[in-house]
Image 1 (cartoon, rainbow, N blue to C red):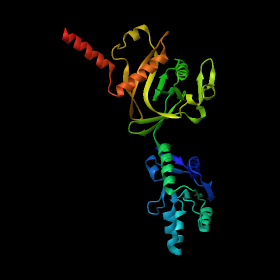
Image 2: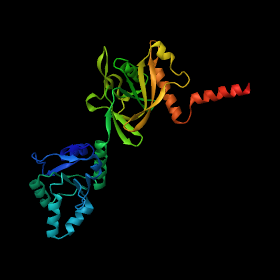
Image 3: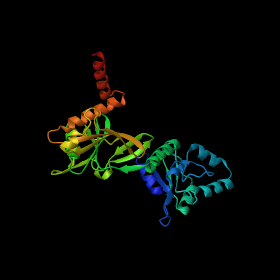
Image 4: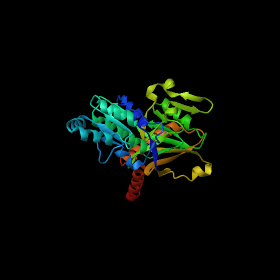
Length: 312
């Protein structure tokens, strides 16, 4: 899968963390956006390199000193290669003042030239983190994403099953909302799924009969969490009496589901009148934490029963 990216989009995201000053040049509006393969994102930005050219070239103290020492003819040739069609931006770091010839090439070739106080390593590390996140595998899952006892818990289920009402009760019990309705999950590593809310619905939750509620204004900043790694899925489902009778009362309804190649533990939570679902969710999360630590209540119970039988 390919994606498109422009100098402006990268610069805007970098500017949110590092102050960048636009010195000269601008993107040519007639120039098409670059088509980038996700596997190539690590080479999009790096220290000055004219052999294996980075799409965004970063010039720090070391590179700047090198360019000042070389002869005029070689210097001009280097700038021609630097400000070429394969470059979408040039960034001067360490508060380096942009030479006049840099500005001239930037304006002539319609390539943004920027400067900043940060070091070249800071720029490269920050940009690569952003680009890695940008090109990571993502998926959106219908449900409510919560932090319960420090664990990322996704509550799923059919429409109108009561996910938002359960989330409100959990919030009132001191747990935190991350995203309602459409949390977005990004694969950060072999076994890590990071979940967060799309900006457009962040802080809000929709409850049938009450409409859209602003959780930050109602409960305060502590009722919200920016992101969390997904550790457990709780699937709410209305079951008939016969279906509930078929559930394994000893083992419970635990299983593993796969999201973006990552295995996540999931438990079925039957919905029925009179059940305190918030308490059950808390118990499920505590049980999951213990299971992760190697403590399985079912196995312990069965061992005790077997010992009792053996003793008789």
